[in-house]
Amino acid sequence: MTIPQERHVLVVFPHPDDEAFGVSGTITTHINQGTPVTYACLTLGEMGRNLGNPPFATRESLPVIRKQELLASAEAMGLTDLRMMGLRDKTIEFEDDEKMVGLMAELIEELNPSKIITFYPDYAVHPDHEATARAVVRAVRRMKDRPTLHCVAFANNTLEVLGQPDVVYDIQDVREQKMNSMKAHISQTAWMLAEMEHKLQQGDTETENWLTKERFYNYRWHEDFEESF
Image (cartoon, rainbow, N blue to C red):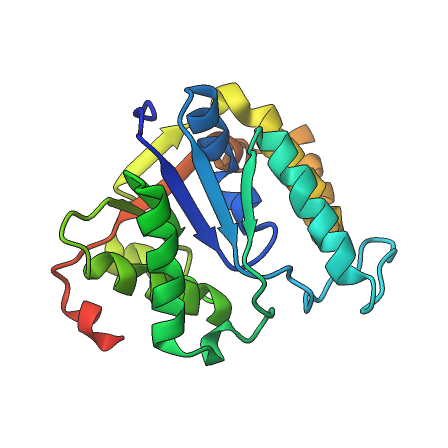
């Protein structure tokens, strides 16, 4: 599917590298089309488990390194509006709900996006992912004129409950930029990239398909589980 032109796209994720894996091709394509894109990254991922392979970071240096990697990822995508929101890694689930909703509402009011990209609540595995998704959904739910809400979902039961993704974008033309976005986060991605390169050399079509397709679900406002949070 061709990525349509938007007025403004707002991407909201909690960690540096969240954008790289699932949506960097979509972000790059929107930018190439002349659509303004804002990426609000809630934390610097300072509690990330990986310190490089071989290790080159320490617990003390990791926040600075991950900030530099996030800036490099933005550069790889051509992104110029990067918002580092200053929350603490692995604590978003403990933030006050209304504070989080207010934070999202302020961004939406300022930017007036026609599309928002975030995680799908209940299908994003990590507590920070889930808390971010809930805050975005709650903020959008209160709007009279809601923007399109495209959600990334990857829990084990995603296909069973949500079915196939509603939107699949072909990002073959920006495959290199997606790879560069992932490589920018090398402290976290070294192991995965090495495995990926090996699979690509072996002609693994599933890996190539993952690199050239990005998948989204439209948020389903009518579902009963909407009220569970």
